[in-house]
Image: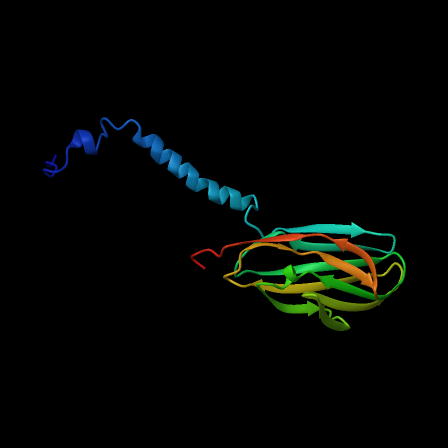
Length: 179
């Protein structure tokens, strides 16, 4: 067997003599690193769709959307309106948190009219007959520098009459450095 270099002491460097606490520190640090992927698998960092719903005598409003996303990601939200009685001028009013720090890529189908009111986005859906269901797909991309928590309430109105409000929030995590 060849002699080790002068700077290497086999008992200390190969056999780790006198270092009984070092393996536990290394194992603990490795376990901490393993926690992040486990949390990601448990959807702690976003994009899992969940449905939130609000009901009144006139209609049911359901929003299917993620509650947590990362900056830079594309996402879509599905808004369902089920009319229990006729809505003559159904209107969706979206909080500013739906738009701030995001790019709206598309809204399908197109609303009859779009406007803004007190920083809120107003989408005029039009007439919805009793028992009819209307669905809107809204696709977004989160700006890469955006992060924080936003209110994303949706109000359903019939003309000037408030029908109901579905309350939601969106948490935006920082973009990964590798993206």
